[in-house]
Image (cartoon, rainbow, N blue to C red; front, side):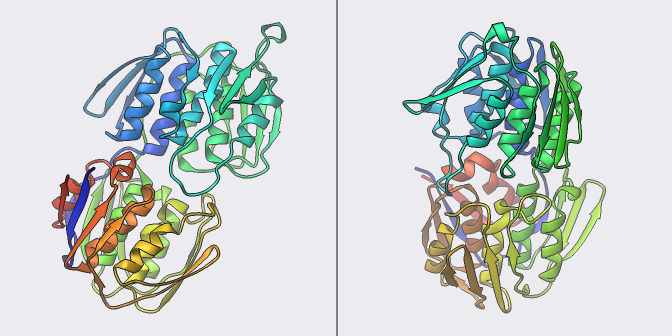
Length: 420
């Protein structure tokens, strides 16, 4: 099993390009199931989750051709509308095939999802919304068995009020509604930029969607969607991770191909920590000339502070001046990285869904274990600022969401290598 060996104590300096967003690419890939025409995607990141989704779609009969960030998906027919446990257990986003399969085929068998062990992420809102549109869904032996009677004319538009904000739930229902008869209204919808990117792609395919990016989305169903070309948005979490790493190490970096408007909350907190940030078009430059100041964060759905940036800011807080209070409101089990950071000498006290971090002048390298995707990134940042050598184990989590992380960090002057 691969590990990352990091020799810390060196500020990050230089320029790298931001990759396409994993959390945008995965639902957009599932949108290929909605049409018999080819969907051509660019700026697709080379990630394990993207490879897993490609395998999942291929098992259903979708033809996939990939080369250098370009992915062509062609679902001329769907031979088997089933998402098996073997693939779904490794990636929660696999549940995003449920809506498109129901809309296109009238039936689907999808394993209950797995993914990172960061807490319960139920699919009840997906089920509730699809049932409101006329689907019948039963959960048996770990699978969702979904169908819609052809005698009823397939899925029908409905008013759906989400009990809580869910990104994948919103995306699943948007895709199902694109082929449903009549109008669907999704209230309390997720506002994340990745939802808006999916709406742009669906619009290019011929879907009629209004309000994406707000908490009320209106979809008027069409009889069929066509092919399209779409460029996946830049990854705002990858962007924020490298910016936080530069701030923690006292460096100066420039990120190109970024979308600053998608991470206002992150940029505001980095400025509060003392970083100087300049945005010019699709580039972001960050410079930190002093030890960062402690900043407190509270995670919230977009446009609030992203839960996917919480671990990275905890790493920043470990070496900051003062005390930071980090409150996690999205997932109940997302502080496992705190215990690993303590092994590096961090002063962190956990109180329920809150972590109180007293900054120390320096961390010390040690062997640590990654527990989920974003925890991995937080541990890497902690390793970059620690004295001596840090080894991060179980980095297969990183490969799910960060494209060639060790190569990009090396390009910024970090001493990082992948070892078996």
